[in-house]
Image (cartoon, rainbow, N blue to C red; front, top):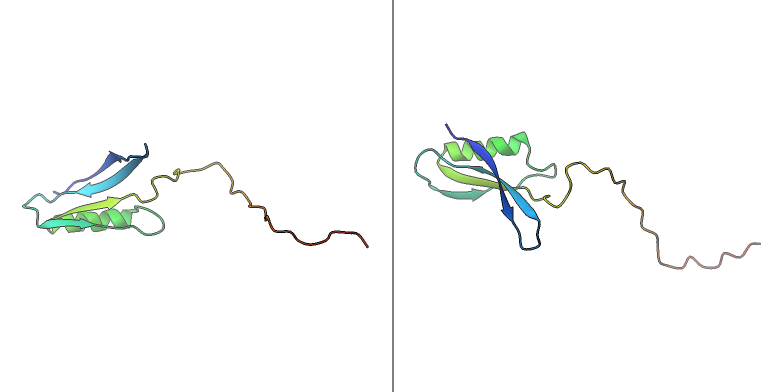
Length: 91
């Protein structure tokens, strides 16, 4: 049975990239990189990786949002405009 695992690869900027990997039990036909949707590596993406491995492909899904914290307590910040809004003299 094909197993799915998560590996971590160090990057040159000091961060780490997680990869969801599935290898076929039989001979490897080739490799496929699976890109995830906006929600990241979900159960659906893992299912695709697993299915490809079951068909003989080495499948890898990189976690493309690896620099984003899984849960952030930081609220989004509002940017202030640097443009002048004109005169604010009172009438």
